Length: 41
Length: 276
Image (tube, rainbow over all chains, first blue to last red; front, top):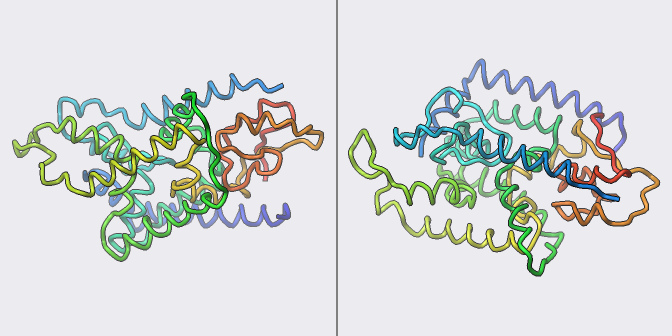
């Protein structure tokens, strides 16, 4: 794989990844669900 | 010459202290009889670690993903977690943190005849990810990977059944006898199968069945953390001998099965880098 493509994939991936993280934390509150599910035996 | 003592020593320290002890450090459960339910439960670790373990502090990302699938909820946070961690570290957590990986490394040290794992079995972990973590939980509304996970059986199933304390809220045993059915025994059989396999082959669970490894493997080629084999490598094969994933290092470094453990970097012909 060419280095230019790796840089594009990396930057695009980080933008999408951080966006999804923020979306999950701030708007849909995935953390609360994980905490709830993780506490169940 | 290969001198692997330093890197392996650091890796064992990291696997033991962070991967095993820190993530399973809720010792209060011994007298409270109730698992941890604090804020850290909302955070996942980047490796398999059953959140049903009595001592568990954090949640398992695979357990959580199948749970999101089972309730038909899109896992925004988890996907973001996988993408960002994967793009920076690739499969490094498998080599440096995963306690199940540590167990496999240690059990392989038992002196006996060893066997190679056929290459085609490297792809079954993707099947496990797609079937047991995504599709089947989505269709059945149940957490099927957790029901069958051998590591969950080892650090949660066995301890809870062996200990089985009285629930302080209800005054009854936490594990009722009718809860231990065929599924429990199937899970134990899967665990026993893998434990025996660990003695004869290098990291079989990581290479064949781990859905967490399958996710990180997707990012290995583009992740920041990389290894590079110099062109003047004489291909003596010593790095392959010490590789815990049985890779031909000069051909397969940084490909899907490389766990970026850096054991091979103790050879002067292999360099570890942070670059795109």
